[in-house]
Image 1 (cartoon, rainbow, N blue to C red):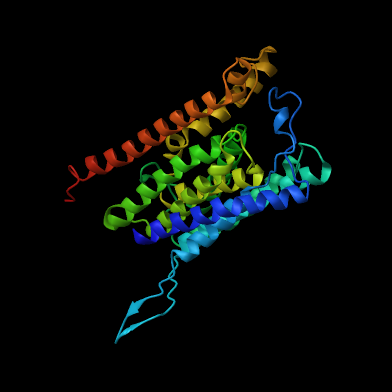
Image 2: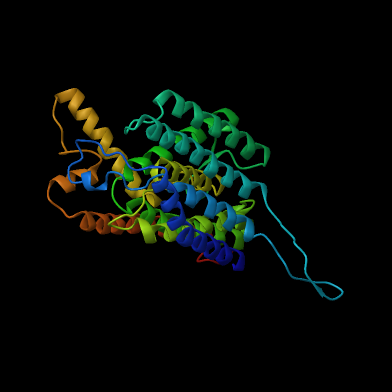
Amino acid sequence: MISILIAVATAFVIAIFGTPLAMRILREHNIGQFIQEEVEGHHHKRGTPTMGGIVIVIAVVIGFVVAHVRVWEWGAGPNFRILPIFSGQGWLALMAFVGMGLIGFFDDFVKYARKQNMGLSKRWKFLGQLLVAILFAWGAIELGTSTELSFTRGIGIELGPWLYTLLVLFLLTAAANAVNLTDGLDGLVAGSSGLVFGAFVLITFWQSRNPGFYEVEGAVDLAIMAGAVVGAVLGFLWWNAAPAQIFMGDTGSQAIGGALAALALLSNTALLLVLLGGLYVMTTVSVILQVFTFRVWGKRIFRMAPIHHHFELKGWPETTIIVRFWILAGLGVAIGVGVFYADFLRATNGGILP
C-alpha cells in the first residue's frame, strides 16, 4: 500500500510542477493546438500549448520507478541500500503505456511540422500500434499471463497465443482511439481517466490480497502502475481543467488508452474494461453510429460527433458537459468495481474462501 501511495504522490508532484515548465518550453517553440474549422466555439483555444502528455508519461515512469526503491533496510544494523524490486508484469504495462505514448508523440509532431490538425496516416499509426501489441502479447505469454478470455476473471474460454494476440491488438487500438476521441474538451480525459485508473488501483490491490483466488502475477506492480497514472493525470488536470492552459495531445490520450488496455489484460479483466471505461465506449459508439447512419441513410443522428460536440452545438456550456461526463465516467467505474466485488462475494460464499 505504501508503494502505491508513493507512486501516486511522486507522479502528482512531478506533473503539477512539471507542467508549467512544459508549457513554457512548448510556447517557446510555438507548439500549439490546431483547431478544426467545423468545431464551433473552440477557436479561442488555437495556439494553446499541446503535447503535454509528455509530462504525464515522464511523471508515470518516475513515479513507478521511485515506488520500487527501498532506501532503508534493517539487517545487522540500520543501513541505507537501494533495493529495486520489479515484476515483469509491471514493466510490460509500462512498456504499453510508453509505446502508445510514442505513437501519439509522433502523431503530435507531424501535426506541428505540417501546421495542421492532420497527423500520422491511419496506416502508419496502425503499424505502430500493431508493433506495440505484438511485443505486449509476446511478453505477456512469456510471463505466463492467462490467455483466457476474461471479465472479472477468466471465464473458461481459452484463446491460445494467436487469438490472444488479436485480442491485445483490438484492445490496445480500441482503447487508445476511444480515449483519443474523448479528448475534445478541457480536462475531460484527465478527470475521467483518473477515476478509471483509480478503479484499477482498487481491483489490482484486491487481487494482490487474494492471490489464491485470482492468480494474477505482479498484481501489486499493476496497482503501483495504475496509481502512478492517477497521480500524473490529476497533477496535469490542475492546468488542463477548463479553461485549459495546456492540452495532453495524442501523446497523452494514446498513452492513457494503452495503459488501460494493458492493465485490463494483465489483471484478467479485459471485458470489464467496457464498464470501467463506459464513457469512452459511449463516445466511440456515437462516432460509429454517426458514420453508419450517414453512409446508409444519408442522415446524421447527432449534430456532430463525438457526442460531446453534439451537446456543445445544442448550447450546453463546456464546463457543464465536462462535469456531467465525469459523472457518467464515475457511474461506469462504480458499476464495474461493484460487479468485480460482487463476483468475488458470490464465488467465495460471502467473502469467506472455502
